[in-house]
Length: 415
Ligand code: ADE
Image (cartoon, rainbow, N blue to C red):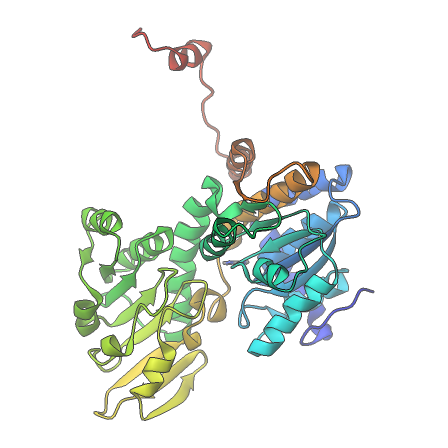
């Protein structure tokens, strides 16, 4: 049995049921597992993964195991581990170092354990594993890596721009079959799910402020509108703001949105988007949640500094009292609300993201030593394969172009 550190190994049976539930929603990835089991493309390679330890991640881990990989796994957020799933994976031979509620120190300690296991491939969500491998000079034996999320790709591109990235990293986030589905429909649903599970509020008729109109923000805005909220978007990018306007949303600066919003959800990837100066303008009862990868978007210290007291009033809900009697609510301590207060994205979209992950790891191993230490796109043919496989699994067929149509698309002459 490999080493592991989880909350409670006796939760494994519960975890197995939970993983089976996810598997039923992730048929394309299960199909890839069958292929990996017969061809063993990862045989003898150790994958070091820093991911949200959820039932969907477990389906990916089982796929890599079937492909012959050895795996060390830690969490990519201190609050996102599903302890039953972690226990089940430990029992299945994964070196899991993860539990819900890790302290900051424990969080980094778990990442270090994964690195000390000597991975040849890193699989990251947010960039912490990749960055630590570089900071601690532990990148030498690493052949390549993958990165799951927008914030992580951003950080790894910054390593590349400084000329210090030591191995090739595939930006899984940037595959079409990832961000158009996971970021938009996954975050769209799961962020709202987190807010509702934490608070139980009715969204219909609420003024819901979405900060950031990237793919995640779009998804949240769309879903909130579908539930009857009056959606307001804040942005710093004029192009995205313009899109939000034409998509029919109210757009205004945070300073104005702060005065009217009932619920605020950040999804910008940037730092201190809701600050104390904005909180000072909010209505009593306003609820703030973050859907971005890091807990930097809502200025939690700023909120504490303008408050006279704080208390937990429900799981994942902290009430901050202001000197004038107003009460503001912060969900999940400003951490990823969809994973901390709900179960993360549903399997249907994680199936696509994680099929890209599995195929990208295989691709990196096949080309070990041949790729430059840069950020690479998921090859188009893999992205298309994930789309085809997903459609097939959904039982939806599409047309094939005729020979005449193929020919026409290659020509500049009119027919
Ligand atoms: N990121 C968002 N949702 C997730 C999930 N369900 N599992 C793993 N990573 C995620």
